Image (tube, rainbow, N blue to C red; front, side):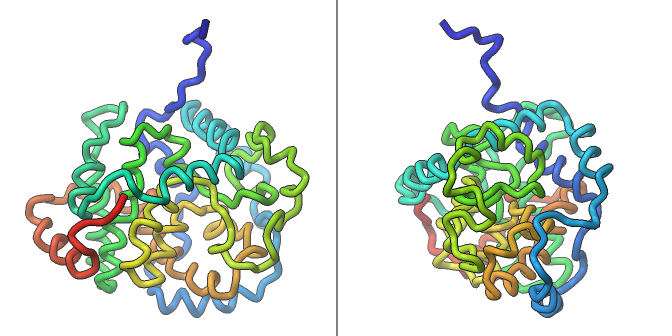
Length: 315
Ligand SMILES: [Fe+2]
């Protein structure tokens, strides 16, 4: 008989937003706010020549201690589950399950409304509906005069979270992403939880490159499973490449913030990560802004969606 009192809760977060709030706590300052994609491309190309370091040597021990001490118990438990179960074999199973995209046919606005049915357990008085988060991100990008594809990317970047509505646990949908099939970087939040991951005992995965060639490019690297990779496959035929990088790697904080996986990235990845870094401030720091009027904004976004997407997509 299962003792329910001692069975770990598969969904410890009160809300999916608790993970993003924790990311914002770890990264309180935007890394590259205000820069254009073109400016960031130039900056990133110069930085690409820098030698690989597994962890950020500038980061003091106190900072590592801080995030541990300050993390909420629910968030810590969420990372424990994520790091314990996101193994190479597990990710292959999830890819086989979801990447054929035979679960539904839906338009983009319909998917936004579907995502909005996701009801989290946190305080309903302070909870902002998911669709408003999507519009806050998009509107901030629009206000800064960025291209239409960039605005659209802001709108849709979290649509992969509909995986939660298919019964997937939180640790399979959100969380910082990282490569599997190679050594787990100590720059990933709570790296000690990888001790329970079966891949920590797999000899092939114990070097910095593991099963991959050095600088092979991220397209050849299998990332931990979550909403980024899923949505990338849903939209990949319809958006320009910088948009696809933003979608596919926006949760890859060990890559775009910590630079812990430069040894797997190609020069092309380095150039396109300028786009990921340009997007990140809009993702993290726009959620406390004023609540958008969904009805008033809908016509603008319906037109934008139709400019890039067919009426239905395979999910
Ligand atoms: Fe996201």
